[in-house]
Amino acid sequence: MLVSLAHAQTTTREKILFNFDWKFKKGDTRGAYQKWVDESTWQDVQLPHDAAVGGEFSRENSTRANACRNEV
Image (cartoon, rainbow, N blue to C red):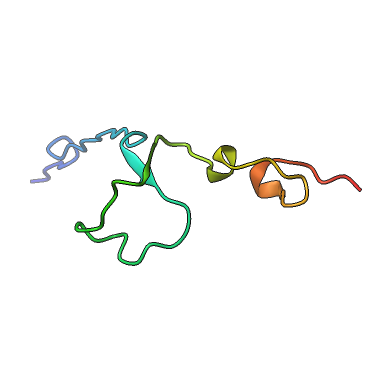
């Protein structure tokens, strides 16, 4: 006797929206992955986030990574 398991097994997909409730701090922070790290001075951000947007514009320091064309 053959039994089909295709109908017995169901795949549950769950969509998780994780764009909100992120923190950002420019630079290195030792142990930033630890639960005890002090995030009180960190900026609240939402994804997508580009750290260059909050900085001062400078054509000399610009790269393709922050979407500014360097023209010669």
